[in-house]
Image 1 (cartoon, helix red, strand yellow):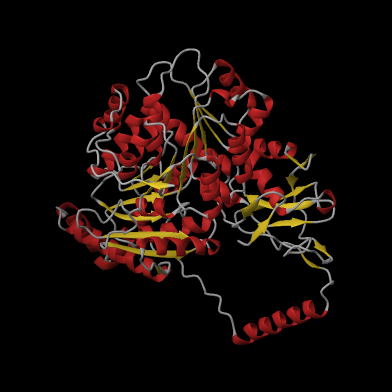
Image 2: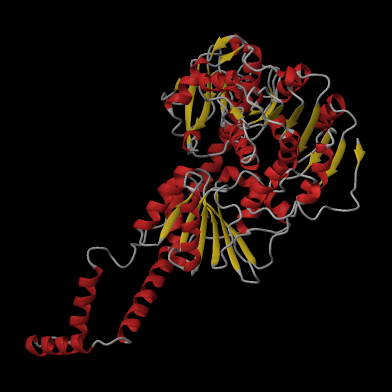
Length: 610
């Protein structure tokens, strides 16, 4: 690969030689100057060169390939696929597709189509039949259309591999290579990846022609004015309780709360509003005018809390935001940095709080490495602290009310005290009780469950006994996969070891066809004639129906909900690192029949909520 360093960096998009329709779209979208990767990458892509871009999410890499490709495109009514973009996930496919549409809004006849698993084939087939210029899709669904003959790559001039390292992690490397082999020999390839493992470099060396390599170091330093901390919790309801306590305990001006899904923004906004806070949701389903109006209300102090998704909060700049709370941990470190960057602005101090489940510890370490800062554990505010805060707030309300004209009520209370021979403080207490209503002013203290030393010793002895038993009797039946973890459901697959199924086959099939990221796939256990896999709680019926027909080694999975108790099975010798009937999850790498992938056992919201 050749390295390129431009001596003169373009200052504006017009300096890059983009056509007028693109410049108008950029101006309307509020883009003023190119980011470093855009400034360096666009000229090479426009020149038709193969390129390798190493850059993190959030550096503007989508525009770095979308703008020059649109600039070279001359859309017409008889559309044929000219550009193919491969992405690892459905969400990224949609995001890239929307970017192409936004940048090309002033280009006549432009047709862009996202294709991914979990979506009905008929709509995709009709769109491909009518003709499209740009196809953005996940590898599995792209392969399906190629095999059907509904997607012909003979007219493809440029092929983009976006987030190539993520495609590697999800087991799509073989699929990507197969697609590359079917593409025309004379074509341009642009490869983008946050990291450059040897397998990605091998693809670049095999399929790219003397590529220009451009590396952009991401800005991962967070503001020194931001105090970062995390609270360990798990499950949606537990997080809501923790959030309610934090809202009472923290003195905040404006607060941004980040969640992963659009539906969660609405659910959480309703919950917080019921607690008495001025709150609103901010998500991509809202029309632009409504989103702008909501942000203006936050700036003006008419709203104090916004519940937002990463996409909806892009570019949000409100000085009065004193707190950023990550209700859901983001998918990558760049997203975390962008989130907490909404506070601590213009020299002000800010507070960033992260809700963390025990299984997300690895992501916390990645964030600390990226930010080069230690994130300290924060104890959930105690009920005693909340009650102290409530009492202080109540007294403050009394003080503020006394500062107003209370003469009429003073005379009224004096008359009542004289008529009934009642002390003023007793009357004041009765009035306070009337004002408070049926809702108690203070929370009830909950007794803590203390673990005795004897109990800990018994647990240690029991653990040692189980360990010794396993060592002495390795073939004794034992629990399989363990209980279903919080936020997950267990599903049964009618394929097992007798059918040659391996964990990698199951992960690859689910990720490829149903487009469920491997991040959402939990424990996998393989038995003789069936297997089990843990997937996010609340998976919709349409996704389950899709999984029922997905094939592994030519046989349908016939997936269904498994409500049976945790099974036991005899351990048998095996050449794999795990044994048949043992759990393969918990963040351990394993090899499938043709994929290398990883399950990370994260409790996420169900994909349908996205």
